[in-house]
Image (cartoon, rainbow, N blue to C red; front, side, top):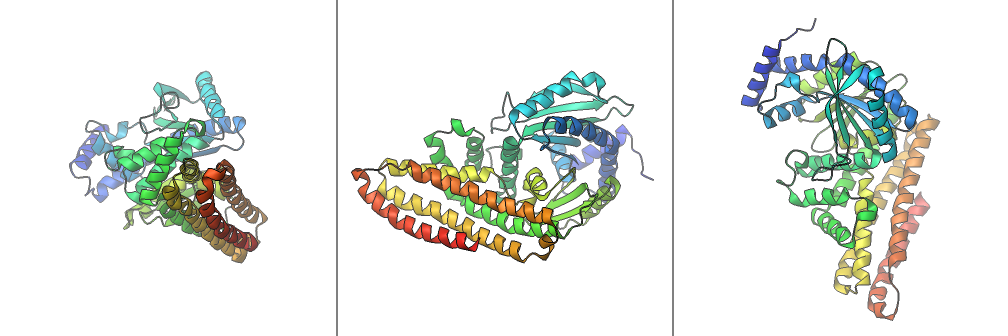
Length: 437
């Protein structure tokens, strides 16, 4: 039987954690665990309600929920000296990721209009970061809802579209790989990467030539595409193989864990109690200090869960394509302004990134061809095939756009001569990968 605690108990717990956050006792972790468990029913109710509404608007939406990680609870207590842990509004959260912005706004409007019929009421004023983005470019709608039953529990709901979600999760990926602490401290620890993500928060049509150049320069400085892309490739294959081995029938609860090395662990369960019990076991034996999340997904496939928690899987993020596009378009700008010396560096660098990507794709195709588990399932085989095809389509699209944007004429003679030499080598490599795939 789970022990119950009073408000006074949790107030004293909050003070103890703030006093020594690096040495939280086993008993205090048990208290946090007990508090988290009190959100089981409210969270499920909110999730089921909002998920139905979301899917009626967008059948392809992704809806998840999570109980706040122990590490996040402790960090928040330290950042807010007057906060009591049991009063935190975001201990339990539900997130709906819609395909388009207009669907996000429609879901938000339905929640407000049908509030009188729902099992919860909106508490306080929602934070609409779509209308008023944060300084770093974060966009989403956050609203706290309070249960109408005697529990009065508060659950946070986040509404965003895939584009916003990709941006937000790439920030967390930068925090994991580069230890940038952007989410906690903004620009204080790493102003370069803060600026990179600030620029990436802009819509494509709002990005200027100067923006593309700045994105490319920061990416080059940190070898961002190579470092992040390499981890994505390795983890993508590992996670895909784990996924293909799993028997997922009736599995809706997922534990996802990743450490600073980006190596993921993944498990699936049929019911909340079993999943939550395993969460606590993972955490108490968490020697690597990994990030661990518990989530529920309905009608899921690998691509959906990868999108929903790419910051935990470290497998793929569509925002990386925007960085590659920035590298391409800044290279075009250098060429069109007759900067021969700069072009000699920029153009081969673009192709170097593409070559690394091509090598990763060859490796993925090889695993695909030799994966015994994927042969047994048409659905999994089709999912993986489509994923590979889409990645080729996206990168080829960037290459074609870049090539069509170069100016022509006799004044570009020396630039064109150098470009043709690089293009010949590039076409040879592209032909090799096409023959393999």
